[in-house]
Image 1 (cartoon, rainbow, N blue to C red):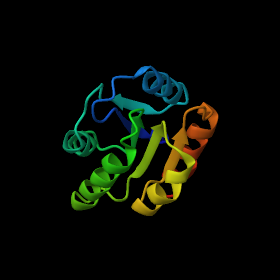
Image 2: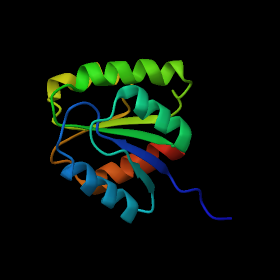
Image 3: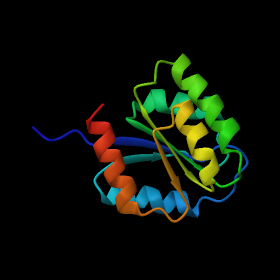
Length: 133
């Protein structure tokens, strides 16, 4: 029997208009054998949660370059819990200062990948943390 492919929803929340990095990450994940649903730009948190439900994903990944990662992640984690998606691996990447890592972890963010993170590290993290759930 074939191994189940990891399904990822990769989202660009808020007014952030920079998506080149998200597209490159999506490509790297596909190259690693994962299924990636990319939402496109300017997504709302409710729409991201709805798409995660509809697509039955294993991972929700946010790419945030705007600096609004704390309020966006807080809202997302509340909705994820409300919708019963708290078994999903939640990742955030982009412009994330080190000083915010503890607060994001406390919220329930599973992995934090600031700019400059290596694709292999992200892929390995996902594989290790999805299969162990």
